[in-house]
Length: 259
Image 1 (cartoon, rainbow, N blue to C red):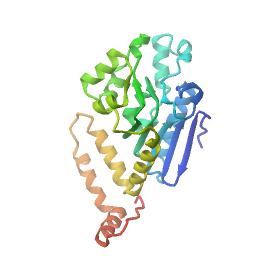
Image 2 (tube, rainbow, N blue to C red; image 1 turned 30 degrees about the horizontal axis):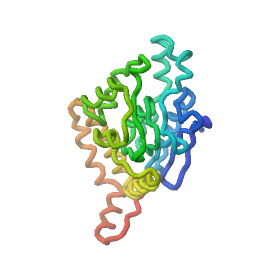
Image 3 (tube, rainbow, N blue to C red; image 1 turned 60 degrees about the vertical axis):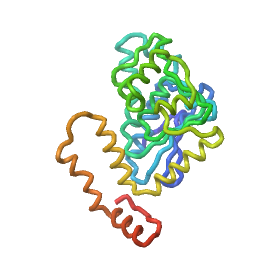
Image 4 (tube, rainbow, N blue to C red; image 1 turned 180 degrees about the horizontal axis):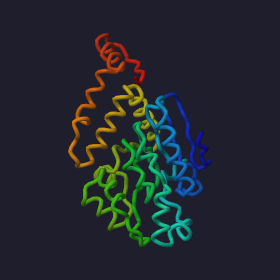
């Protein structure tokens, strides 16, 4: 079993998992150890068919996260080759997770922490949350892949606005440009996030995984293969389809099995 660092916490409540970046004293800044642990946590959860939804959050109420831990930059990003290795060390567990992921955003959501949002599926923020990518203030350039991921959520023009101005903007603006899915009063964020997670967990998990997979695939401009076009019809051979159809006819609540 993968051993996670103490800066990454994973909790389970039935089919709902919570992954917490646990560095509140650093406003949940992400150092290499934490980034690797975050990727490993999502790899572990993705392999678990009992999971139906994952909540990603930062510890405490002050910050979802303030990005990469700048104290490592002198050792890990002091030349192009080392910076490339540093970037690769973060891993792709969140990006590759099969299950729906909801970001719970409170307080600051800055830099590399904001960069986690495009790999989540729903993003719910408190009304006082603050966003920014201050790379331009540090002389750092976002790479092609990072900009492409940002543009999953916002337009080309808004991506450049965020990157070129490198300034902070409020939750209302984040909602307006599509960076977050919804905003709620600060004291209602957790209630709203876990209510959404329960709604997802109550639905057919295979449907959720297929929908996430298909939506991600459509970000690739390559034409769909015949095999890919046929895959959605596999749902009609699942046990869950029979359960859902029977429950709908009987007007009862379905209890899906993920088969």
